[in-house]
Length: 513
Image (cartoon, rainbow, N blue to C red):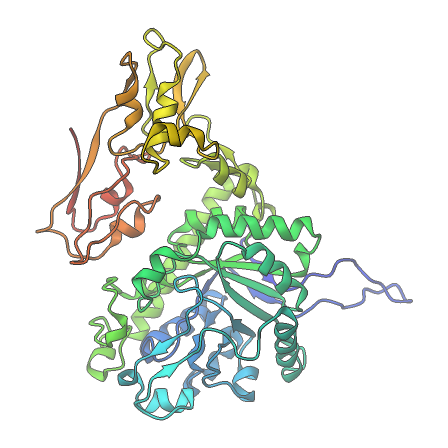
């Protein structure tokens, strides 16, 4: 079972010289023993020991870690063959030796958790080491502007790409990192033509601890839809082999890794998963510099709590386990290599996706929809009036009256009556908390077993694991930080919502009413 992959521009054709020998026209490549890399986390935002753990794990695994926008500490130059150096809008710590130290160079244009926003490292985290590495005064805020002030078009980006290639004698691939936004396919197409070798797409569920909540929760799109759109656009334009695609943001287990590759990715970035392996408890207070686990802090008494020997071994265990699980799932599908899995969407089925999402991801609907709660229709009672569809359209329209909702032809009901295997049931239903389609059925033909997610605030530790694990993003937090009632009640294949399954303190229970 082969999980090794190569990132970089692939030649469109094979060339031979006059003597019949192959002409070596291959662009610089990154060789990954596993299709996983550690995403960008700058020195300053995380501690020295955390950075060392990532670097040592990347070397042992035969993969790469990203320095982030904070430069590279002098002690970590020894890990250069497994390092991706980043050039962000602030240009912190960027100099010729820095560019030559890494195996690849990444231009950061955007970040999934905060599209359109630059970086900000508080001054209280800028100590002597950080100051020297970033080449800024000690105790000053390190602020990266939202845009690169020398990049306002694809032509400007092309200039920077070739400037970096020229500075490194065309020996290193150049990556461009962008956020997953609504027109990401067109942006990726322009980047592929700018001369970049690798496109990195960051989804909106990225776990940046210091990202503003309002931006994190309301800007950007899921990485699954962005990846599918980019891959299809590049294929349609015939330039898919000119660039590799790496995705990040919400890659939290080996199944997510498999799905991303099947949707068209060449490899994946992980960051939150790696920090959890190091001991992160998702307190989401990284900007304070008071991380108790020695990860997002620069206080010596806290940093020493993270042992790089143990931390690197935990990261190795995580990625190795993912690699084994990936091979098992590939074997179950009859696929023996990452190349055969890449873009193979025939292996995917959309569960709980509406028609538009199925078309965007170019996947088929799961015929059985196993593990999903359904609204079943009793054929003996159904009059064929389709009032349930009208009520469903009205419930999701936001209109003040049903007449206005029905006049708007753009509104489609989430429920649609179909017959399969002589059983009529509603499909594409997202299950409102209080379904109007059930209330509106004049014959009582529709029934649903109501379920609700109950939160025990006394037991809740505020780790937000339930929010991260909910596949529909149905959970939210109030101003006080308490978890609100779930608006959706879809069960997974284990018979319970994923937020219930993922809560580490068993503070959430699922009860039938």
